[in-house]
Image (cartoon, rainbow, N blue to C red):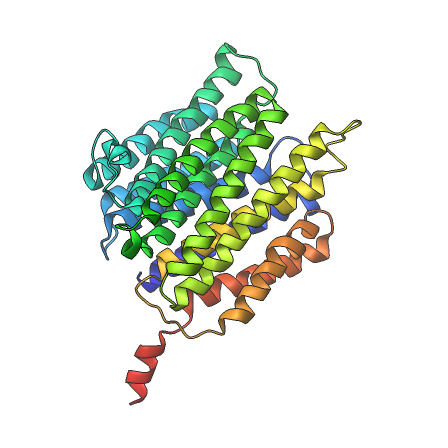
Length: 369
């Protein structure tokens, strides 16, 4: 990836985190800065990187440029509640994503049902489908809530659906994980890989439906299934993936994913408890969200952006430690205490800039010699 793109994406990701803390200093009941923070990270940055990775070209195409511009308009119009613009821009965004998906794969996702096809490719197409469907569903929610009111549900809000934009990033990261397991595609482990794919992709959809319906017991069963699938992914990856530098980062990422599965199950039990108060458990929810968004998803995006640069010049264990400290301690505390927000932004900036701009070891050694 070219340096200009790395600068653009790193600035946007750091800006997204800053918006996540603005309400600590400037509380405003009219605007949800958290909404803007999620959109900037998941849709604008993550969505654009996903499409760029899918096309596999060094040069950024006009399609991706239009998507990036449209995603910014989408994010800020939704933030300022100018919903007619949000709905209108969602149409070309959907078309652009589908255009790239169809060019890469096919109109109908028949790939999912072919056992011989690589599981990494299945996760990749699922990621693109999830992105285009997320854009459409969020727009339908806006139409329902702001104009028609066909369906009345407490959880049927844009703030619930914008979290769905993290699913494409999660799926593309799993695609990268399984791309390193191609050597076992022809073995008996292929069945386990297929089970992981269907459990994760269908499980996420079913889990989201149960969230909307506020059915807690089914949520527990689905999250347990997802947890087992993630543990199976960790087993396959740790045992069969080649020992390269990317493996350390993605292993850390899968660790974040397991952590979010555990915290997700724990949060469901909290919701089921007698006398449940959302305000008292808000801190725990933020730990869950930050671990997913700035832990697991960041690992995937950084690997995608620098896939051809590894090995890169950095002390991996140190960066991973700071990453975990920032995502599960500093950032959640920053939601409630201003000074921790500064520390979280500083730590996250260090991680992002290190991952995006650390030099290539081989290139440096060649230049010296």
